[in-house]
Length: 404
Ligand code: SF4
Figure 1 (cartoon, rainbow, N blue to C red):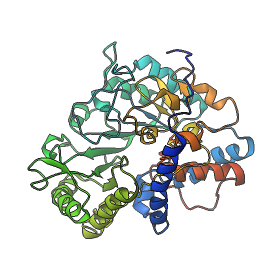
Figure 2: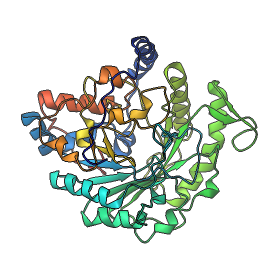
Figure 3: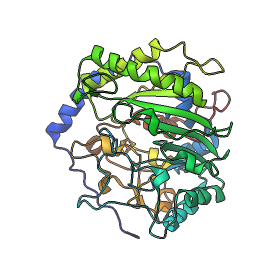
Figure 4: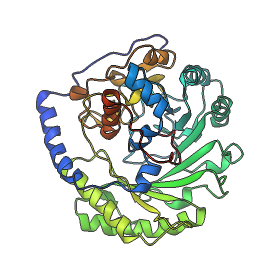
């Protein structure tokens, strides 16, 4: 893998297929025009607005075209103890079926050293697989990975299925700025979670529920699975789940429930799932945190095509295959399979420095390779900064400012 240049294949889509995808997107764009993002959405998800608070980094970007890493995703393993049907990275192996188990810790450390010297402030651990199941060929595990990150004085965000969290209570200290537990209640009940011990008070605990078309015939927890495109039926189904989940979250001291549609769905069907999320948010708006904020949060994810892709310079993603990708969602673009494809890679674990040695150029040909980018707002924001300079008129830095 060392020094191996990723292949650049811009032929993932035919011109006809791109045209079809754009037609689906027109529907989404029309809907998006009426959307107002909430304060909670800006605070707990990546909407692009936190970029504005990194004034020095953005000023340098505007004046020179050189980028600075702020946060990096690390997806350290492909192994997971669950098998959720709508996992965003459902196909966690290479084109020949080889699985990427744990990326060697020394490779992760080399990568972290490179980026830390360049200014990295935070790391998000997520999947692919389940990060707490991480184990490399030398036997290093999640505990060793956390030590390596803490040694470099980096903030940590963790996205987890929550089934093994209690095993690591001793390492979850205030360097963890947030922990987000993904819920899959149609397939796995809340009883599989192990979040019995309270997290440090500096650590925001959040939960995430993907609104998907895959529901059970007999109600939330019984009967055979089926795909539904009936908005009323989907809403009834997810109400059953949310009514069980919200008291659970309050009991655990959770700060939010992120409701977001399955991003593998497109066009009218995607809007239907958004409508369900919005209706759920409205229905449960009186269920609040101790400081009076509604727990339910609708994340308005949307597919689009940015003019250029710069996000990966500021928020690169090291995947279990040892490659560095421009984002964690490039798999959403094609219909081939749910697999990270080397065609999108920008560097390798030991060549990430090259991202910062030159002024930026787009990491992918967005028009040909990324018709379904869910970070279009973020990329457009960066394009705006590059062309016109940072917005210096924003208020105080929000919580989790380094998780752009
Ligand atoms: S354009 Fe969007 S989807 Fe494509 S690589 Fe960049 S951030 Fe990811």
